[in-house]
Image 1 (cartoon, rainbow, N blue to C red):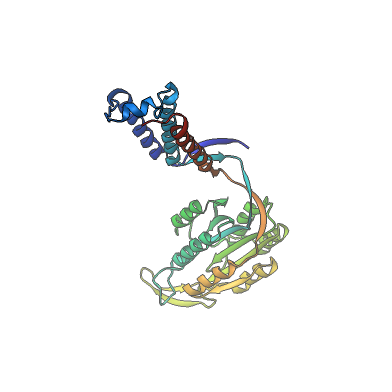
Image 2: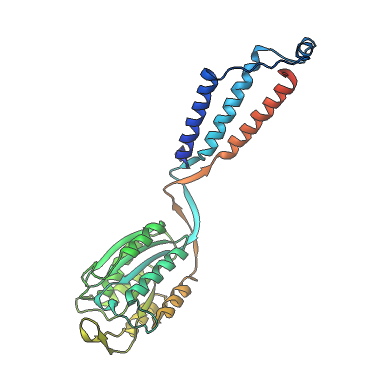
Amino acid sequence: MDYFVRFAQPLFLGLGLLALLIALALRIWITKTPIYVYPLADVLETQGWSSRHPFRKILSILRFVMLSLLVLLIGKPQLVDSSSKVIVKGINIMIVLDVSGSMQFQDYADDERSRFDVAQDEAIRFIKARTNDAMGLVLFGKDALPRCPLTTDKKMLTAIVQEAKIGIVNPEGTVLARAIISAANRLKNSKVKSNVMIVLTDGEPSPEDIDPSIAIEIAKQLGIKIYTIGIGSDQERLIQHPLYGLAMLPKINSKLLETIAHQTGGQFFLARNAQDMRTVYDTIDTLEKTEYETPLYNKYYDVFIPFVWILFGLLILEILLTSTIWFSI
């Protein structure tokens, strides 16, 4: 392992060092030694109640060292392990999200958001809830786009999901099977026992897609469990679109999605409204977990405790010296 030291608060460290240097300069070049005149001072000094040993200057050095340590503590010193590995409980999850044109439709009476907006918001909430899981993202319409590989950086993944929108890939199609294969490719080298794929779509595969049985077989061979979510309705219906007038709302191929989930050991869910979508993600959130070792880019260890003990020891030493050996009036 490679270790190095860093300060988590470099700004505070810099300000502290500047203040310390100013105080030191004032002490050396400006401050004058005060002279106190007391009637009994000469008598007490004659009787040995005051020490003028030249080593008493060490006390000033001790005070300076203690102030320096305090400044270092303000900077929050940390020991950084740049090649550590930790044991966590989690699974690998690939989210496969439909961004075809039909996802722009709104079919929730109590919600003004589109199908995609609901799916996007709940996906983000799900990602934030899965603290220890490595997760990735594949978007698909007429093409399949691997948007993010497996990562434990939830902030980055959340930002990528937030930036996703209809039109990021050609929306004139739904290549469901190709998207599953693309996500499976991201999971094929995983050493984790539990690999999961969450596929969300609102329509049937388009003609340019490949045979879904091929995607199912690949997932089975790789041991990937697929949870499928159909968003919308399993019945075709007409809607009044603000731009296109009367439009046919595509139905979900429930049978296909159920087959994909059943043959890979997952489950099929039908989300007819926003609340159903949240319930589905909450259900998937109860997935089994497994321990695995994962590398971290950096692991930080706070090392302020040793500095505190050194500081405490120097303070006790100064008190003992000023009270016993180098005492003064």
